[in-house]
Length: 110
Image (cartoon, rainbow, N blue to C red):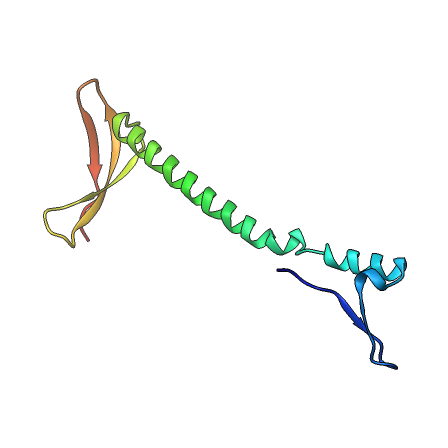
């Protein structure tokens, strides 16, 4: 299985196999045989893979940072909180932190 190179003369319609041709023509066939798909055709695939890897890394870092923000709140941090109903949410700003307490200001409901 594979490709067979055959050359046909336009004038006499005789066919020639690769072994019967002059060296110069055989070299031309060898060059064309080894020309594959250029690497630049796969650049888009590589760029897409890098984008997905960056998104995955960023998402994992956000989850790590979120855990740190919850464990160690700082003065000035703003948190989004949800109320008892599904449509109610507000923000809370940390005003001071004690060893066992966190003091916040809630934004009033508009």
